[in-house]
Image (cartoon, rainbow, N blue to C red; front, side):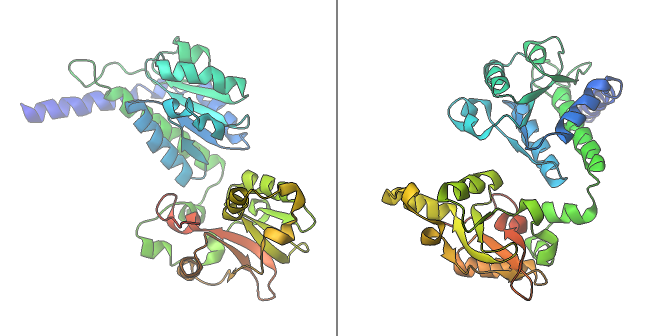
Length: 323
């Protein structure tokens, strides 16, 4: 009896996923275009089982080239809302579309100018009515015999999230090299065997300001790039120093007058750097020894060619320094 019940659950779950095939249409294509055009990040939100599914979808998107993070709707209404801006796209997940916490949050996000994608089993719901795009995930039935615990519906939502991630991966031409750069890729030892050149940030991704910039301009760049540091340049490819968020916090703690300080007074001159040809393991060793999380990457003539963040080595949340 137990075996047959288990098989029936799997049949119902499979049935739920297969029912999505005919539900994927123009709204899905619109969601993809909205995310492709997003200059910032995809913010995923949901509560309960849908929230857990949202966290997994965010993890899949991050590892396949689409910047995303999960925002708990209750925490958002108590301060975390500050992390969202008008450039973001919101993916809200609720099978009923009537989750009170989400329906209180989404109008606030919309007022900020963020576009909203709703993933729901009820396209006529309140959440769907307030969204710019609706991804329908209606399933014929839940596997729970009581019809109460989300089962087939959460599986379907997860599958549609995977479909979204894979389509975006292909649209962005995200290849194996990029995957290895962004994805934990197995053991820490394997991750640290790659060269710095394979995981460093380059071009416009590098947080930097000219030496003549004001301290407030440097802090603005620090916030924009969100790497915890900004490089102060004396020329197009030569560093004068580095300013970290720790430096800024310490200045605030001392009650320093930002308007009366120059970058040269607060930055660290001649910061530690690393060659692009060395291994990620070498970079980690330098970071641990000097208790830093950001390393400029320079060539043989000390010209700046990139920047390396600890997260690029270990993955978000796996390693922290106190600064």
